[in-house]
Length: 389
Image (tube, rainbow, N blue to C red):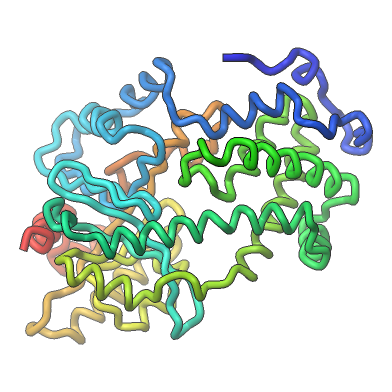
């Protein structure tokens, strides 16, 4: 594999204002092609495979492994499972189901997916974790078509993100620049490289996996520019990109997502089960009364209100009474396996592990769960029973 040129590696700004935009080639360079290849390739090297199957930490005391919210991304599931086996050498009970964004994937006897959908009642995009016993998805043609449409539409947000910068949509750019404190020089620098990324996508579109066409493509590309331009400029560029992305998401039409009720109805018709992930981000969903099997009360992105969310679920179960099946409590590790093999990692995301949710062992949380006879082992048993029924 070609390496980046010594010329690009050698440049390193100490001050953002030292940047001369005229020195940046407007045409696609070999270095641009190299970076694009690195951030979109899905084949793994021997070194990356070893990185996957050799975890840095082992948890010999953990007997029960519950993992129903994690993303294989471009890492083969069998490699992820090898990692799990080594992480938990003494596990006795497990339920491991992948939940790729809008792509249904199977693992052992079960299959799962994390679906984007639209809750019209409170005008917000939400996500659902959907799980099936594997044999139930053999006739899931309609559901698979719904997922395909959702994946394609969600991917289209990247093109709106790009067009906002290079077309440009001036009022969004101005607002993003003000909120991020980006100077005109930083904005112009970002425009130059986003235009290059747009051209690279167009040149390689037919060979790009659809799940690689996502917003993070831009930030991943800029991370590779650190050796060339230094941390100060790239940090400012990324902060500006984040502000632009926020504006894009605020204005992204939700009407082309399937409604939450439509997704739930289709899943139920197939005998699938549904869990609401990180509801503190989608808090109105707690009030919607959707037909779901449980709520995720903790994950690495949603830790602040765990005990409160447990109380909400327990209160809902009281309201349901003995005549209805109680809602289950889940905790999700939200692991993104692709983060573990990136050359430039998001350290927080890369540290997440399939089946490791430390909140289960938090003494304060345990105290609350024990009072209501809730534990991870029991959740595994009860959810398996639902999936298998």
